[in-house]
Image 1 (cartoon, rainbow, N blue to C red):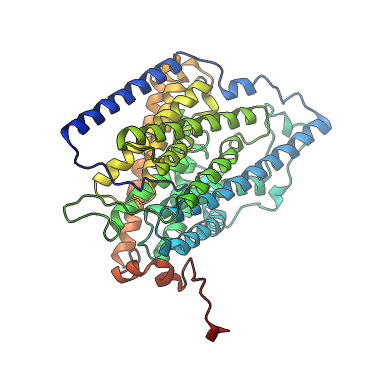
Image 2: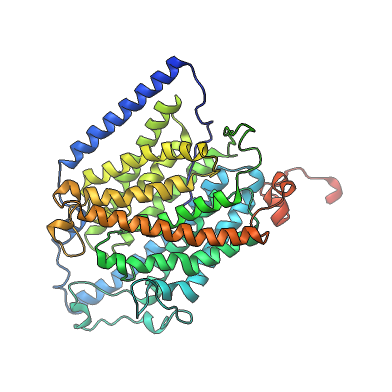
Length: 498
């Protein structure tokens, strides 16, 4: 579920006068004070969450033709959501291409195209069986040969006995697979922007195979496959941790192992601005991702019920809050409202809300988005100061804000999909610290597993010379050196060619 994301093209704030520094510190203190007051106010308001409202509509009473029609509607709805999530690949590609040099545009497009292609095929052959196994020991499933029962699974049991399972109506295997494969491709493509401009295409293809076939499915199995995180009470409705943290932490490792782009840091270690070639392309990508997220979050309900429109509105709230917070924070910190940071903020809000959107009220959702929009700006600047070159801010948006999304669930959740017990509600809604601890443990487990496995993967690729292109190839641009043709060809026509 999903993206690559936006990072600021502005230079990290450098040395200023003492007066300017004091002014910026006052502005930052004011920002945090206002944010703290807003979050505190929101925490004192506890209207019903999306699932609580949806539970007022009982689907289990439907029988006969009505029940069959609900099955059909559920499957068509999830199919449509899968298409929306697959469309997010367009958004990823445009964001990454717009925020990098024009000489690498075709390479960016090719990587995102192959993420979708490889994601579907490898997830079908291997990842699906690991993520959603029949027999499971709680930590890793066993993959079957391609999708077990793919075609036979296209027929859904609509007998009264099958439809009497507490109002839940089953999805056909092909529909369920397509939706989950779209999520796998989204997790994989997050890394593309973090290693943009200096990665060998063959090395990137190798990474894409491993993450969609093994790393991502193992993480998914821990929660959505019924593993130990699910048994523990961990909540991740649409993948702040499972999807976004997996891609975000893989992006961090990739950026660290491959090293910065040529010229990104001066000899004294200060980051240099390397503006992307098209902010309009990047912002078009952000807005396409925003639209695609209406398949990502509402689709995770896995059925067409009254929770769907509520989840859609909450998705919009989180995106809007994150975008406003990102804009305001960049304005206060950098002196101007940075366009790419506003886009960063919108995506950060969307990433963060994925975990608890099914259990939060509107005010909790907005609070989650606001904090994400602030956090992502400071994270982008902080990562640069650590001399890590992440051209599109993939780790900040997906890794950092994905982790915040898990914690936000532990704070703002009003109900629990596990057992509805009061102690499973968030800390600020009377449930104690239990859920917050579960969310923290789950986030740390995901981070540790991804850091270790992708560390081994990227280090192995680097050691055999399959990760980074040569300085000459990087200077020429990957469109030419890796694919043999530019992303933007000259409009000049010569008479000799006619």
